[in-house]
Length: 514
Image (cartoon, rainbow, N blue to C red):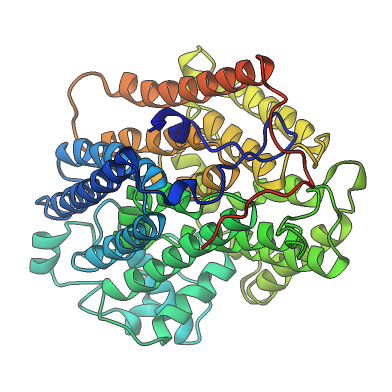
């Protein structure tokens, strides 16, 4: 078994020239090593589920114990190892069935408990309730007297219940109860839909619909991987991680809906599979105007769920010398503008909600939030200037890329990955987008960056051994080192003997089967 080659990322192309795949049927022959990989994957999946049970059964509300960090990082390690074994395992169909079983079991288990790391889903439920009552969600904060009739014993428990379950001023499960909502309008539409649609009570309803969105994301990853001639089992590198189990399953973060829409935009822009040989045409082929409009609309909807998918705009709109960005940009702008328009007419600049204060709370206004830059001695204005310069340089590289060598998902990964390494977000659920792009682009080393947010986030709530600042900076520094090391190793392999071995674009390649 060649485990390092799987963990290092499946090569979407050999030196940018094509795709290399094993001979048809090779992965289906259950040799001793591949059968052992299947058995190991089964044991690994059982271990992942056992860790998930331990995470869910930690006492206290949300992030209450240091054990959560150790369990979460163990989940990351075992989940990635299990995913690698599933990719290597045979019989192939049995390995795929095992992966799908785990993909369903993890969110199903999450539905048995409440949220684990974040209480954002309570705000989702509140916003959906307010909109269903015919009140613009950007008009009032939850404690406004105008909304007194919408408050109930679940989101606003009595003093005894509040103290026992979730101590917070004014006895509410909502975070920032005086602040107007921060979530964009398509996210608000999703909250309202969840409120109106049938489902289990209380926390479990947003968990259910976020889990369904996460399962849809896994399905989309599998389909896009297969279309690109890649093994769809690589989707396990998202499905078996805490991103799917905690952030989407337990905590029901709306980010998974935005990522699903963003990948939909990439899927629309991807060239259709040709009937001759089962191959897509060269990646630089320009999609039709209708497809570009649709891709832009889907990306606009993703941005109107969470703002940071806007990072993908240069990758999707500009496609090298054959670029025709107007349709994509117009589609994106139209959806964002139309979704905000009724709220702007109703509350004006109130649609910004808590966003300005959020940037201040997170330290981005002062430039104190850029951990890797701070580790290099850069803070304040200098840190912000360097962060902007880094993102500008990566954007320029994306705009100048050759789409025949750099597919759209890899260009998008450059942009999102650079933003993560400069902004070093504390919220682990933001990493769902980065992880999906890493899996789709075959650059699995970037999963280390998504995992780096967990030590930072959990250390904000509990005391961990050692210096918290060193842990936070060190987590992202180790992740950046892994990305750099794998990138250097990949470049060395391409430059070495046999680098030209592979299949050129346009030549037949065995197509992965679902």
